[in-house]
Length: 313
Image (tube, rainbow, N blue to C red; front, side):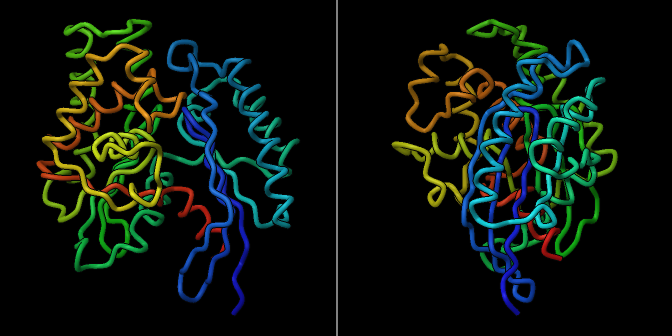
């Protein structure tokens, strides 16, 4: 059977990402043709106002127009395109404006998925190539986004999943504000909120006992790049890297004590993550401490890949 060419778009709170790939429905093999990310900060101010900001919508629509050119260039028709919208668009009162804009540009209806469906897609994308041996199951997968974090436990299939309202953008806006160096009180308030949301996650998903902890999304991949001292962002070096809890703790401390300029000077730091990476690293550390995991396995394959597999199937 010939490969199926698909285009998957994941629009989250902080970034919008595109994957154009050829998938083999029989083997599950995926061949990337184009994988890219734009920081659009769709969640700008949503936690405070309940609405999508006009500037955030403009940035998102500009990214959609760029992605439409890429998709057309690879000859992917709208029947093989899937656009999944996550936390910020679930939270916004004016999501109809967002939906119409995406539809007009890409010709597809954005799917505003539930947190549980988001978790399932992330699990499929992250674990399809993790089979025993080096990465034994069961897996606890977490997708640390801008506005929400999804936790999902399973081995061959999802056993339990829950989405909770913690993420690098939400924590930064709610607790750090415009402070370049958050105070000890601000850090403790953010930490308390993360712990309360982890309590909520644990009502549904056991957070201890998994054989492998798998971390997804930009905060986790950026922390991996920092831990490895990479001279730039290197997807191959980051994918399936392992970071110890002690190393994550050290990086979180350094980022919380760093100025904006110092964070921006880190070679592997994307400019769109500079102001939210400290809160993200703090959340990552709290997750590792709650789970008791000695290390986290970092995956570059995540909800995008799960979306793509869903189109092909």
